Length: 461
Image (cartoon, rainbow, N blue to C red; front, top):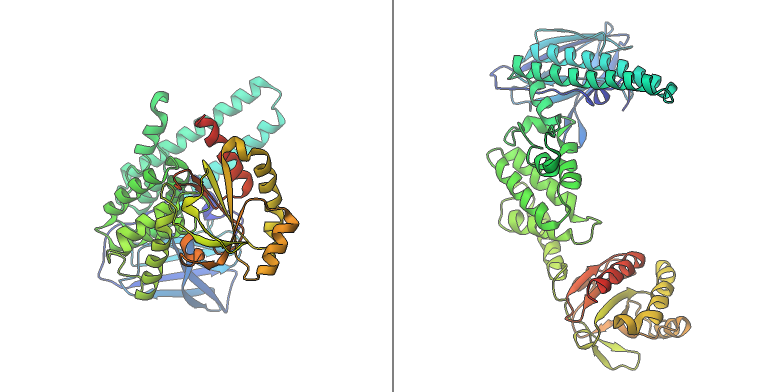
């Protein structure tokens, strides 16, 4: 959703947040000049999405009322006039208040009564919009004078000073309103201030979550927590599974006093890494499942879903990087049994393929070209496991493509379903093993697998 100037744009600079509890039900009155006899939507932020909470009737004077029980989750809510026109408001300790504005510019023309939280929030939104507009004007001017060094310096200094003023403004708000919801938003959005270039990364990582309370679930109902969480795990942490696992366990443990936060963080780690495209990150998913699902801690998940998640984890566990690959014993084209573990090769590529697979048609010639040139140099062998049940099609494909490596018939096996063993859902799928049949790389396109193999070979010369 977009509007003339969205709250999310303002939140490039902005924030917000809420405190304590009350015994009263919520009664929030709205009046929107410029609309009448229609229906509007109340929604709330949650994680990385927005969710409809209620629909409310707007009368002929643009008036409507939102009522809710005292257990309404606290956080940041949205009044949706249309897909491109909406505004935010805070649900926290102020249970009875009113908001009045017009359809043309809801933020600029907002009048709030009996809600210090929302008054402070809109004061901040307007201030940030004013600063944003000024800064965009300076940026436009910079483009026009980019060849004039003196002008560029003057304008750049203005921008730097504005950024300092914004930071000071935020810090003053925090000091003056320590219990405000806005305070919590500011703390969530702020970035660590780097003071020592020699320890930049370590300092940034250690202070990334300063002043963020993992036991306060109000933070979930804002548009700022999920992006920060994703940034931390995708961009701040070193992208090594063990490092990510260590940090996630620390964070989840901090959230345990609040069941909603605990649930969300476990869900985030599960969904974020279940189907990660980064090789080796399935180890993170397996750890999360073993730690929180197999031990019965994910109590909000249905029994069937839990069983399926554990089943998937158990399927992935034997084929994690660094594990010895499960053996496969299959027939070759002469109906002789071939044991994968008995293949003598310094590097073994397992290729799961199908003669009728279009992507295999594209990949296999590249693999063969590399194999023919580098077989002796690398001590390389290829074990090609065909998934087609037709022996005729299989043998015709081997002959027509001149596949002079080890070819075996996947459906005729003595060691169980290779689809389950190696998580083969589609074709082609590639694994790279060392001479001990330990998994070095897996499920990469050939270009990346080839590069990985070359680097590995050069490192071990």
